[in-house]
Image 1 (cartoon, helix red, strand yellow):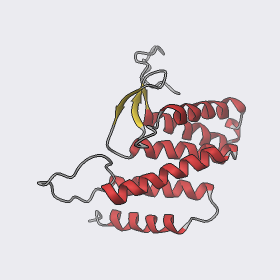
Image 2 (tube, helix red, strand yellow; image 1 turned 180 degrees about the vertical axis):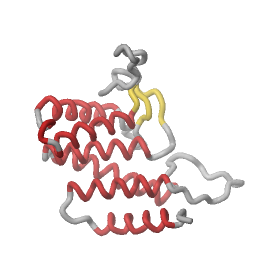
Image 3 (spheres, rainbow, N blue to C red; image 1 turned 120 degrees about the horizontal axis):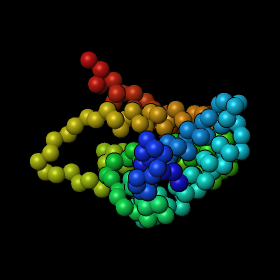
Image 4 (cartoon, rainbow, N blue to C red; image 1 turned 135 degrees about the horizontal axis):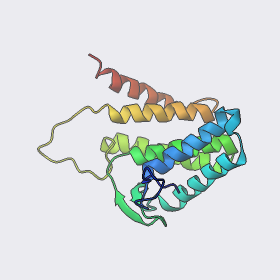
Length: 182
């Protein structure tokens, strides 16, 4: 896993690890490896693999399938959020690494999490575990369809042809986002 609480002097000031950053870091190393010749080396790829293996071993709660927002240095859960964004970055990192390594385990896990995210969006409005209270009114958020659209774009980099379910999700996302255009 990766640390992010590093001071200007290069010293760690906190050893907690943010789940969303783990996914973003795996994605960044993998994308650099995939797209830029000067970064196509074993050091970059191995950093991405180690990060992904840390994520897969420590970030996902086996029962709820939610990813932890925050874990200890060793990967023990500290905090979980009721949004889908850590899961989105988890998926993005695994898919890009799967593209780099051609290792099916990363692609399968990344796509499985995306399917779980889509289910949460359909059944829980993108906020799993957050009950709808009787006095609340419906809102049309833009962050959820924007993130889903990013995931669909990433799927297109690893799959030759999108499955129908992803095409339908993309169309739904665009429709939702366009409702916010003034």
